[in-house]
Length: 81
Image 1 (cartoon, rainbow, N blue to C red):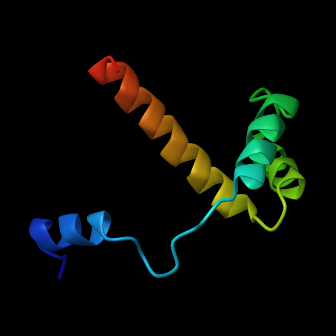
Image 2 (cartoon, one colour):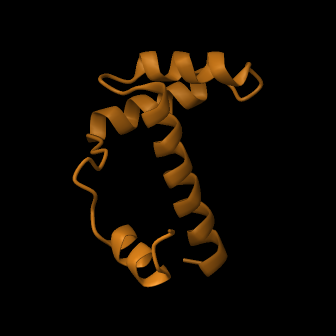
């Protein structure tokens, strides 16, 4: 059965044990790779190349990190801060 909304919120608020930690250097590598490999590229190929440019991160981790950052940026824009 799906978890209750309260349990889901608590789980989202608490850092997961296997939470993906990014160093400043890895973040910089990701940002650079996003500029180097444009969105016009075939998606799978683009993310494979981005992941190869980021030390110690998989394609999946890079995609997830990108989604998190994009969500933060749009949240900031919508609140006007």
